[in-house]
Length: 310
Image 1 (tube, one colour):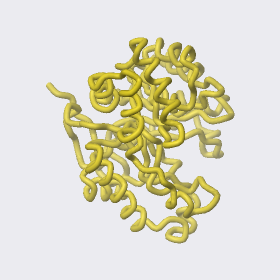
Image 2 (cartoon, rainbow, N blue to C red):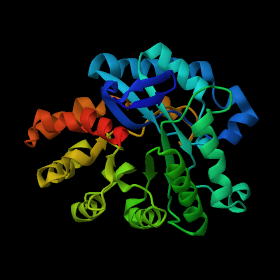
Image 3 (cartoon, one colour):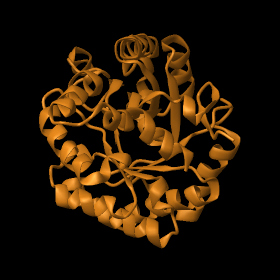
Image 4 (tube, rainbow, N blue to C red):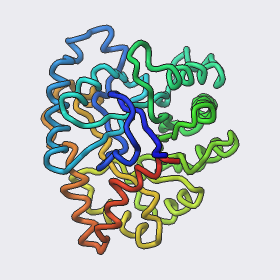
């Protein structure tokens, strides 16, 4: 029987995911600022319009079929907004349960078990009254590393993973090699490492380090592919593929239609980035480095299917 995966518009067969980007965002903003200032901070109608334009472009020009939206609750996950974008763009969206690295008092004073109960509930029963079920779990370690608070959040996601069987995407700071500590925690919690993507591996060219992460059984997310860096990133990926690791790598941009992380609220809209860099720049660069079409298909089609089938 073909395994199914939850999208914002309902279940689809994993074998029907098609060309997949494994870590993007429709929006990535502060929930607190949005709830305080609403349209003055983010105009949802404009966001939907921009997102539909960008994802339709990627579908029409690159054959994009599915996006994994890696937005956790504390970066303003809005499943109804994402549903609208999916309906209008013709692209499937898989959404996340989970949390970013977070030091709010509400987090610091709760146990991993307590927090996990909320994630487990929405994974089993749907996100609020939307009827949408998450298809992946999100966790993150930032520049503080895996300290006591962050360790608790990772444990909460590991508990949710064990209870729901959903795979995990883990944001990392590779200059601090935080993946090692994350993997240690996941192992201790009994997580299935073959169902974990160690994210942002495109931030480093340390092949030996990346091999050591792969040797734990994880997938690597090369998910910050930039027009200014794709050639360097392609060389690192090609080296790993030629070493035999091509079946455990996925790709994307970690980009968004709207975000508030810049110096103002409009500069990102003038960005030349979009959701086509992987297909238009990275994949051709890999071909020039001797990577075959079959190996490239694994990055965008076969590996996402295998990951969500586990």
